[in-house]
Image (cartoon, rainbow, N blue to C red; front, top):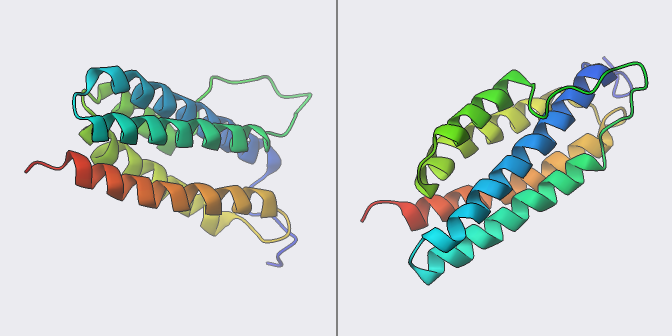
Amino acid sequence: MSGTQTQVGIVEWAARISSARGLEMQLAARLGGWVPRVAPAAAKLLLARHARHFAWHAELWDGLVPVLHDHHEEPAVTEQRLLDASVALTAATEPKAVYDDVLPLVVATYRAWSGEATPIAERPVMRVLDLVLHDLDFDAQEGHDLFAPD
């Protein structure tokens, strides 16, 4: 298959991108909501910074959502792997669960998408995945280290 042909159609990419945007917004809201509830200043700063990262990721995804005039808008998170992450996020009762349970699902999904994207047909998607995965790898490790039991 050449780099100009896509393995994933535009309708599926639209659903994936919309799901990624929705999940990143959920992550931003959840982490941001925990900022006033955690006591250590370092945890507050980390959660606030990571919440902003997720909000920025949602903005990046928003810039890629194709307009499909013959396709009705679906709920925010519809892609199954990200829906699993959304369910895990809803069940998370502490920041540690986001870093240990939710983010690995998101990273695995984005890595799978990266493997399915082609350099010419989906280069904008690949560019966003590169940026977002770099952030997620760093943020997940940083959050895991901060919230790990002593």
